[in-house]
Structure formats: structure tokens, C-alpha cells
Image (cartoon, rainbow, N blue to C red; front, side, top):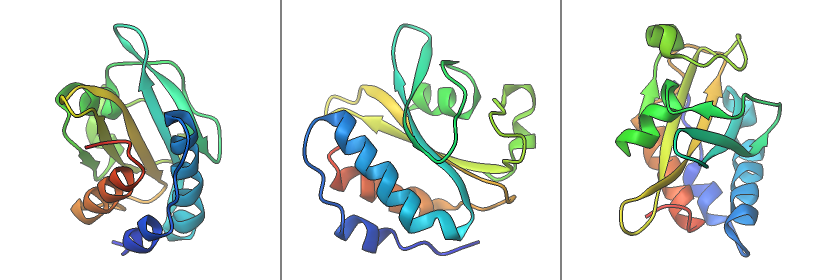
Length: 150
């Protein structure tokens, strides 16, 4: 497991503007700060419509969009709880494989003050067991610093 510098990232995060702009800043800052620590992709999915999430700002390659409310992102959106996936093969048919090389992921819900979930932050890695609860805490802190979750 890799220790990642979330505190330093959050300290340097100056987010201004609308939600879309703040999401782009978070993606860019996370990508630049973490891409050398085993991260293969970072991006947002935003709830649009009754049964789908649509790709928002992301780095550094395309991804599936729209996606239904299944897979790790859909599960987190519905449960409003973060999820660390040690090995995506454990998800079976419920896994959405945008990049077949990805082996683990962490997904964080984006919550309004009233508890409504409006989207998720998703990070992927080509390595099994790349993420931990430390990543959940660090990413949540970054999202809070950007005003994207409570």
C-alpha cells in the first residue's frame, strides 16, 4: 500500500468558481499529486436522470459514460458510503470495465448538506490492493476543502 500526500494536496487547493470548475481543479491537483503513486485514472461521475451517472471532469484518459447505477460508482451513489475495492474481479458481473488493466479502485460519495448524493469521485489503479481507508479519509478531506462534499 502506498502512502499518499493528501494533506499537502488539500493545503495547496485553491478552488474558486462553480462546481464544475472546482471539480476540474480537484481532478488536476489529484492527478498531478498522485499519478506517480500507482493511480491510473481519477474522475467524477455526476447524477443526471433517474438511473445514470454521467462522466464529469477526469484525468487522464476517456472512460465509460453514461453508466447506470450499478458497479462500484453506482453502489457508492446509492449507499452514500465510500468503497474501497481491493480487486475489481471480486465485483464479478457488477464491475464496469472502462480500462481492462484496472485492478482496484476507491469511490467517494459527493454529499449535499441535506445528505443527498449528487455524484462520486472515482480513482483507479492497475495494481491490486492499491487503496485503503487512509485514501478514503484523504480524498474526503480534499473534497471538503474544495466544497464538493460535507
